[in-house]
Image (tube, rainbow, N blue to C red; front, side, top):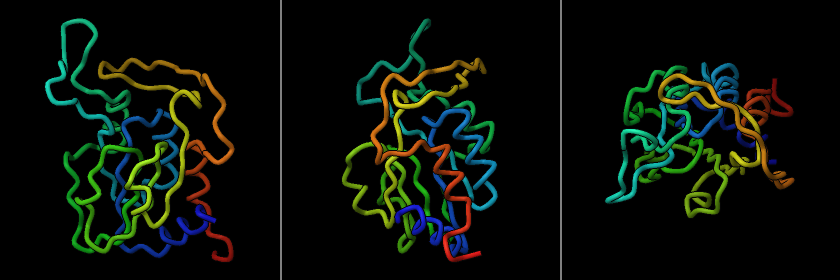
Length: 178
């Protein structure tokens, strides 16, 4: 089972790093911090980036950040900019899209949490499909610190898990291991 394999990788890693999604809800980010934040060296990752020529800000609605929860991710994980991996980084958990796998440390194993079919899925040692915003409920904290709720619009597929529940499962000991 993929979750058990991911748990074993986490348990065996000596220098694990995590790229934390700015699309994660407050609840997901808080659960990751509480359950796995001490295990991983964490970096805040911006999942969405502006397209070439895209207007990125105006005086009313548009903001330069295309990610709904950068503020909460920065609050919890103290954003340090572009990830700088330790020479001995042996495991990287990549949560969400928008990261160039060519920038991962050579030889590091990869746990990839994503919602979409992408070429990177096949390059991960473990791929775990997670729900998208319209399949779950939660809260985001915007750039001004305002917390807003969102509600699920659609049921998620049975093969998909919410990241919040996944983090609880990943923090549990692997079966057959203490």
